[in-house]
Image (cartoon, rainbow, N blue to C red; front, side, top):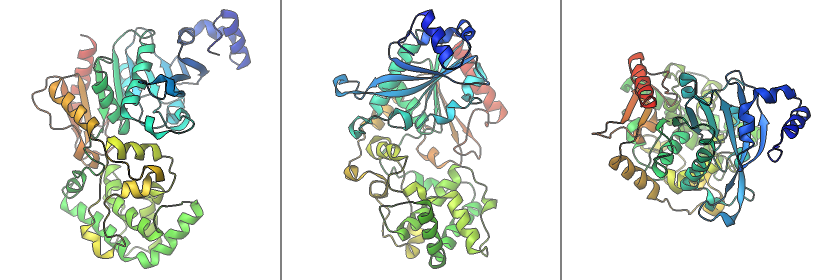
Length: 432
């Protein structure tokens, strides 16, 4: 489709895909997309939120510093609110499937009635190069991808730009602003960690102080109960994994133990009410069902769909560890140190060292600069332990923490007064 640029060609395309040719006169964005040389394919999408919405495919170099190394196609979703509206670029950290839905609209795009550019992260889903050469999966290359997309679309949308992303996407928003500080006017990372190591070390003490002592005890008591019942539950756990076809790089008992260790992080991360934790006298089925619902072993499986994330976490984005001391007598593992490399990385990368260059670069950028940025976190989200929450003497960088909030913290979930402050800041910056 991309190579057909005449009106006659556009007419033929709409006929072929079953869209009335009259729509071409009502689709000014489509004509502009056809002028972007990096776009090789355009497909229309249904939308309840936008007048036009398309999934496009950008040609990106595997290495922006060495384009001769080859290229891949990156999926970019474009949704149109108006050429005179601001543009929100969503720096997704994973796959883009959910953004294809007709009802999807990023929070800031909705709040501001803004255009939306949604960029799938390299090495995820349809944006995966073949063969999958891991050396090009770097934060810098991902920032270069975003810069290429932004540069292309600024010719279409010349107004103010806002970058935003959630979780790893929030990390991406942050690193994108670091590598390209002038690409966007405003950055709004949600629940974005800034980790300093493959096992950062700040998450474990955070979990020991989270919420209230009574609620923390309920969580630990459940973990203890699950480990005490291991003789009865392990065969059921093994059967479940076999039925699902899960394969692991460790014994099934170790995977059970890791699932129990992961439980506390996962429960607090997603804001699961502690009231849902089964009582100590619950049946084995109730205990196991709850454990699987909160901390499923697919997280640790070999050849996980999330392998690209784990590679980046181990290489430069960082991750968290486990405090095994309360459960040591009941565990089959002597130490959890290095679990990310041992359990979740491709075999050829198991000895890959962590590179602190990225975290140092981001930290230095935040200390020396004062870009227009709003960080949003949840008070009870373990990722907040590694959040950007302690910067001082900044006029433009603001941090908002949802009381009792989880990894689901958003502008809309903040207390009304805080929400108003966020929107006042953003609208003020947009009107400068």
